[in-house]
Each structure stands twice: as structure tokens, then as C-alpha cells.
Length: 408
Image 1: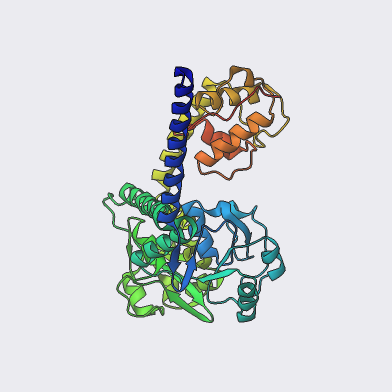
Image 2: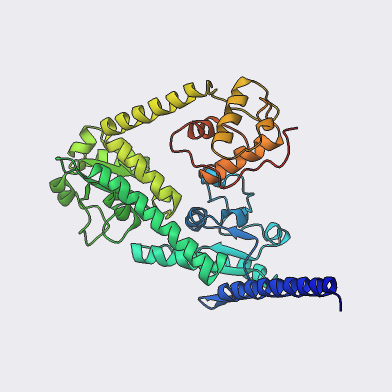
């Protein structure tokens, strides 16, 4: 046998060994993630298409990063960042034909799902996962891990969910550390309507968890009953009151005792809808930020002004004027060119030829990737919020550029 033939055979064998190694590696990874069992339901493989009927579960799924799997949602899922997901109707009796047509693998719901609807979906091979709302941080962490396990597997999925939960709590801790070092100790409470009753959020409620990160003390943290006790609330006299709706506020103002609370008299009251307070993901962090913005306006104003100054300086450096309407596909001007330059500096575009001032497909892809990396709704349109983030010092850089050829 000639030397050249031996070299060819050796090369072929090497390639076979490499391909075999990759094959085994892939199989091992698949086996390490699935099958998984949650409750009494087993998933042999990763779900590709999901429908979420519970707004709370949708909030967590979005926080983990599996909202890209959502092919449908109920009308109760009103989060703005999920507005592009098609509706399937009510969370109690959704349109089963839409769910089935979308080749849905699993439906996430709460206890309100109609039993006949559940049977129809199961008869079409769709798995139904009913999840109850968490009441403690420990239960919340378990919900995160369970969702991660279902949607990404017992290794990769659980790890991704745990990271999302840790980031949520860490972000809340950051807010708390910023506002809990003052010399004045603020007290707060959250009142809400439940049917014809007005109640107060006490221990082991999500509202209490969120309130604990405001840097203030929940006056109802030790309350044995969720019912509003006029006498005890009058004694504790919270500095700030958050309420669920107009009915709750009107009840406070109509009560002869509660209307004299300092928070009510000084208008230190703020509405946070009850639906928001029962959401355990991205909404919880947004609510917390809204609360501290309301409670600490001076500190927040200073921080906002400082951030705005930094952003303005960066915009001036790139000689860009950010319009209220932003930029979109087929726009062409010097501002678009400045945006493209910023995208190149952040690593989303690598080819200088794509900095043309024309908003084409490459620019759209770069903007979409920027939005993805910076936790902004992925529209491909450079709206004002996207541009403000892009020209801020904390804009997240790209993992790799998107351009493979020149801008068309």
C-alpha cells in the first residue's frame, strides 16, 4: 500500500472517530436532560410549543427566558413584553382548536381551567400542567426549578431557571440595599379587595415578599388574619400604603378611623393592581422599582438625572439625536448611521461597509440581537427605549456580530 493511501485511510478513520465522539456527546447530553417527571406527568423530550393560560406562570417563564416557546396565551396574560404572543381566549375556557392547530406540546394553567377543555386537549395528546401560586420564597424557587425542568430538562433547564431566580432575588436585594440605609425607617402595607372584603397582605404572601425589599417594614408582617383591623392599622399608622384598586382606596377613605392615617391624609398612597402583585417574575421586579420610585422620589430623581447626563454625553459623542419615534426599516439618515456605528462599537456589526445610514436587513438583525442581549422586546425596530439603552454606558455588548454580508 502506498504512503498516500495510508494517509487517506488514516484521515478517514480520524474523521470517523471525531464524528463518533460528537454523536456520543450529543446522546449523553440528551439523556442527561430528558425524560423528566413533574408530578405525575412525564416528558420524554423538550417541549417546543407551549400555551400559557396563567399570567403568573407566564411571568416566570418570561423571566427564565423560555417565552420564545409560547405560541399562545390567554387574555389574562397582559404583560406588555408578551403582547406579540397570539391569544387563545380566556384562561378558563380557551379556544381548543387554536391550541391544537398550533401543535402545542403543553399547556400551563391554574386551577380555573374548565374540566371539559382539559379533557379535549389531553385527548389530542397535549399535556396539561396545573401550577399553584407560591406563597413563600422557598415555594417560588421550587416553581422556577419545576418550570425549568419541564422546558429545558433536568440539567440545563433547572440550571437556567435557578439562575433566573437567583438573578431576580439578587436584583431585589440590590434595590433594598440602596434604600434601606437611611436614618428614617419607613413603614408600609398593601391592602386589596377580595370580593366585598378589603384585606391586608401579611406574612407568607408575595406582596409581603416584595414589600420587604423596599427598605421599609410591612406593618402587617405578623398579622394572624388578612382582614383589615382598623384599630391595629391605626396604631401602626404606616408611612406609605399601596392598594389594589379604587374600591380598596375608597374603603380606606370612607372609614372613620382609617381615613385619618397619615398616609391617606398626605396622599402617600399608590395603586399596584392585585394581578401584578401575584406575578412572580419580571413584573415583581418592576413593581418593586415602582414602589421605591414613589417612596424615595429625591434619591430616584438624582439617580435618573445622573443616568440621563451619562446617556446624553454618549449620544453627543456619536453626534446622534434620538427621535421620539426611533428608527425603523428603510429609514435613511445620519442618525441611523450613528446608530450603526454604535452597534459596530458594541460588536453587533463587524463590517464597516454596513455603516451606510440605511436601515436594512442587517441593521434590523443587529438591533434585534441588541434587544435580545439587553432584555428588550425583540422587534427589530430601534424605538426610543432601545436607543436610550444603546447609548447608555451599561449597554450589553454582542457575543458575536450578525453581519455576514454588506448592507443591502
